[in-house]
Amino acid sequence: MAELIGNISQLIDWDSVILKLENTEPGYIGPRHKGSDDIIGIQEMAKLWDDAGFILIKDGGNAGWDMFFPKVHFDENIVTIFSEYVNVQPLSCWISRINPGCMTPWHWDCNDNEEYYETLNTARFTCQISKPTVGHAVMIEDHCLYFENQGTVYKWPSRKSWHGGINCGFKPKYLFNFFGIVK
Amino acid sequence: MKYVGNTGNLINWDEVIEQLRGQPPAHTGPDNSMSDPDNIVGFKEILDNWNKAGVKKLSEGGTNNWDMYLPSKNFDQTVVDKFSEIVQADVLFAWISNIHPGCMAHWHWDTSSKEDYFNSVPNMVRYCCFINKPTYGHVFMTSDLAFAYSNQGDIFEWPSRKLWHGGVNFGFEEKYTFHFLGPSRKK
Image 1 (cartoon, one colour):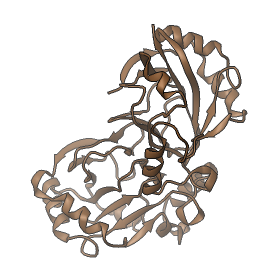
Image 2: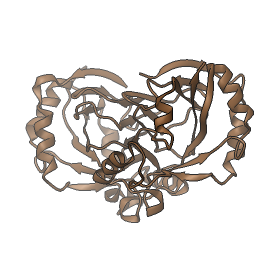
Image 3: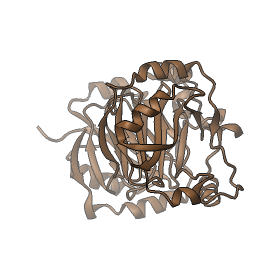
């Protein structure tokens, strides 16, 4: 079960971050990898998605999410503040956006550097950066996060926890994602 | 939402689901309502919200879609009768919805062409029952509550028949839910 760490709203003005992203083109629309890519976990996941009938945004469906990155799309200082808050040295950080009617189907975050990450003592966090909004849900293993206060931080059971997100509401759903090395 | 209890051994939901898997639905939502939106109280507002947010139904290339199965036609009426006894209410309308993987029942309340009649019935109660075994990616949401990984057979009473809600399936299994509406027998 995801572990509630606290609330970081006093340290980061998430409304300002979101306001800037609202008018920013994402780095890309996930998923970035193709099902045929030679990356640990991808091919198994792609088969599950295909068998279930998910259709990616690029193919006219609703399975997909926007990806924003520090320095490029939002202030890197946010990562520093968050890193100190959870006491974890950052390895990767991004903000995802799921638009109304879209979803991130059930998956775990396969990485290009999976073998390297396996050697490290990592921790994975998310922060609910939108204000509580109807129709915005994240499910991490068997735990569903819904209508959480803005700035609420959760530590995941594992960096490789299976999860998914959904937006059946009317506003874009933003989520701050972070993993790194436990100090 | 008030937890009422679990249907326990009184209804074999696995058997009901297995029966539904092999047959087409009686109809699909929201197409059924969209055929005549002006004659359904409240539906125009829902449709406007969907359109503003860019939500599209399946036939338009979107994923706002759910199947509707009806008693007697698609599953045994005794399921409704047993449920009716459990919750101590008489049925006016019961159905089983199915949301396919990748689809959702976008934010709405259950509008009906029988709205005037439903409004005239005293002590109306509305229940839903999660009939799948706990499954990843199945979430049902109301204004400030979400139900995920629910126990098979769990029954919840809604605070209002007109509660706004949404159901989603970003998992790999079909998501079935039993719904019940009718006047309570309780005084």
